[in-house]
View 1 (spheres, rainbow, N blue to C red):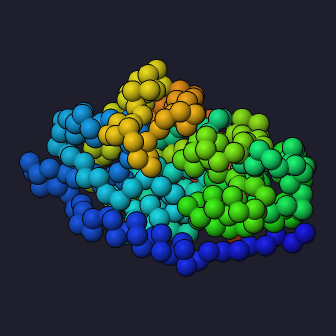
View 2: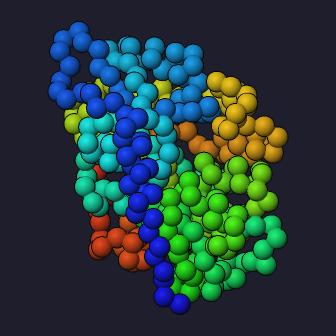
Length: 335
């Protein structure tokens, strides 16, 4: 079956415009004057996680103040593609995404580098199917429609699952939509499965009668989370990037030990609050997640394999070398 690529271009452009409109256009355009405070622009963390708690209790600002910096929360955390555009356009200084999304963005316009990584998510990402579906194995996806976002985590998860189970990629129809459009399409029965990550899968598994056909662990996913920094910012303010990294590394170690303390940071009711099964699944996810850490030689090798896999699967136009875009965060304090 020929791959059907249904691109929701208008929705993607709308999403990018909304995220950009939420971001500040004024930022760090040059080296800070002596004694001036440097502003680090970060996507707002929402209601959960180490950065959310750091925002609430002021501990992140306190850590950054030691190197003459402060936080400006801008926009909201979400898919990496619009964040990558904001990094390129000097509307954002750091953002988290997946190595799969980062590779796709870097291959287009390398306006940022990667300075930290989190081990692949074994329990929060995978391929969702309805509990009532007759799909029991990856082989059962042949002849079916699976919704994915183009060139990022979800497309990688689907292609990786198919490759690991010897199912030809063109045996499955890929339906390309933005993540915030995908749940409704699966619920309505227009597609048979959805490859996605924890931001969306936790709520679906808790509330929508869906489960993972396979998760990241089942398919040997190498989909690291990565932290990106705007090239000009890290060149001008390396100590600020190092201080942010140090804070995040330590805070996420504490988060893994006491994950419940990092949920419902600002409120316990509302669309982004966690309760019941959703809370249990989020705790499982946070407990399993490793801390943000410096990029190792093993990580670099995995990044190269992801880039090669995307090239082999024709997601990228040819080979791409990630290595020139990696930042040694452990050496930044010496610059």
